[in-house]
Image 1 (tube, rainbow, N blue to C red):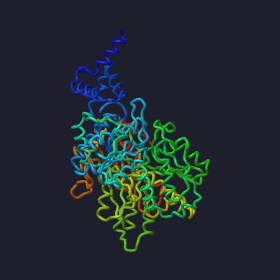
Image 2: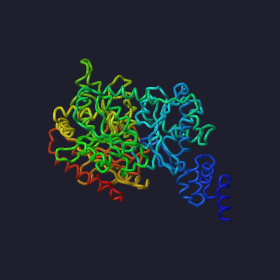
Image 3: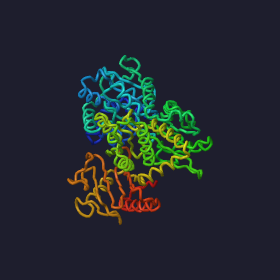
Image 4: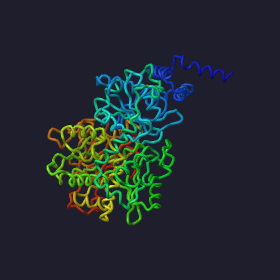
Amino acid sequence: MAENAEGDLNSNLLHTAYHTGDPQLDTAIGQWLRWDKNPKTKEQIENLLRNGMNKELRDRLCCRMTFGTAGLRSAMGAGFCYINDLTVIQSTQGMYKYLERCFSDFKQRGFVVGYDTRGQVTSSCSSQRLAKLTAAVLLAKDVPVYLFSRYVPTPFVPYAVQELHAVAGVMITASHNRKEDNGYKVYWENGAQITSPHDKEILKCIEECVEPWNGSWNDNLVDTSPLKRDPLQDICRRYMEDLKKICFHRELNSKTTLKFVHTSFHGVGHDYVQLAFQAFGFKPPIPVPEQKDPDPDFSTVRCPNPEEGESVLELSLRLAEKENARIVLATDPDADRLAVAELQENDRWKVFTGNELAALFGWWMFDCWKKNKSRNIDVKNVYMLATTVSSKILKAIALKEGFHFEETLPGFKWIGSRIKDLLENGKEVLFAFEESIGFLCGTSVLDKDGVSAAVVVAEMASYLETMNVTLKQQLIKVYEKYGYHISKTSYFLCYDPPTIKSIFERLRNFDSPKEYPKFCGTFAILHVRDITTGYDSSQPNKKSVLPVSKNSQMITFTFQNGCVATLRTSGTEPKIKYYAEMCASPEQSDIALLEEELKKLIEALIENVCKNGLIWRAV
């Protein structure tokens, strides 16, 4: 009898008017159960409803994802604020509506769709399936879709958008996030990630198109529509050919005695890094067998982020020792970031930070440009870029060498858009980076690219090897010439948005309303820049040169001792990140003194922020 009652409840759920006491929730439940055709995610909502879990239902159904620094990103599972079949269909319908408005030739030029190797059994959700549904929505509306037939590195999508002259593209990925997450990363026709106002306008269009259209669930279209094309072979060939533009020592590469170990962190990188090494004339790097093939559970690492350092590089470091390889290259699961480790003379590994690698890349790309430029090219036409929370080392190199350096807001979307502007104005961009191991050498792709970065590091190391110089030794030479830049980056975990807001509001109203702190412990603050409000005390009009970003919190303090420290909220995780850097002149060569000064300043910074009981993750 009880079984029949439960069966009746199951069959009647779709036809019930819900009375949870919350009209908004009742409407959302009804919509979900009507629209979701994925049995597993529909069942998740039915189970919550059956068990009276109204708070969880409200959390899942009464808010929607918004565009952060890397597109839409959330956990996979049921609910309008999660990544799943239905929310990807809704997002793509909104994209269609917005692109139709923006491009009269949308149906001639088409749209690019790529995906990584993520997946979740409990919600029957995988990047490949979500990519197919994205394609289906557009194919049902007679839009040509370039859908990659297998997983690709994230940089292949923005590259394909430009190469194929598509109006836009989407990559289904959550990059290096935890295994539960997935995402929907959008690229505009210029090959850069979308920035404002496109993100806000697309969200408005999504809100206007929440009910799935006829055909939106028809993923068979991917196999039957003549409008679906597979760009994999063509784009891979073109990409590898373009890669040769930043190869300067092919002959040397083919003869090098250096060995390289590469780990792809259970993601997409293995095949593509192998091909990139081939394009540069290298022997293939040695893969880490346990991490070479895709695994959505990331079974050998506690988190799939190579930025976490030696603890997550364990397998690759041990393999390198066994194979007598001095350099380890690690691409993150979607191969847009790169970590590098080098074995030192004391048999310990040096894992380079993003800022240290940028110092090497900046030196290398400029040195190669200088040696290969034709006589009439002016250095004043040359640019390098970095996000504002990244090391100022490129600024120091630019000041000495005569090229231009520019800062952007955090997130490679800002770098990509700015590079496009510079290229259209006849400028040459050699290198750009963000401190979280995101690098771009050359301008074939307008997003960070771990595949090209990996092979450029290999070439740099091989060149230095001919002079008996290691990467670490060359880094010291760069600092000796341009000034030591010692940085520390870490974060506080905070799962309570009001607490985060109160921390930043306290800094804006420190001793009195609208007054920022003048000291951090004993360290005098010279300037304050608040990107959230648009305030910058260093500017004559007190207005920030960088665009205002009201949706995220970010305050930068410049100290009298040459240190720069930024506090900002993460766009993808429940974190307050801090970035602190001591920028010394070449004359200041006492590293121990500079490190001690930075350490004390960070302690003062933590003392001021930790009053709020945050969980600190020490690097």
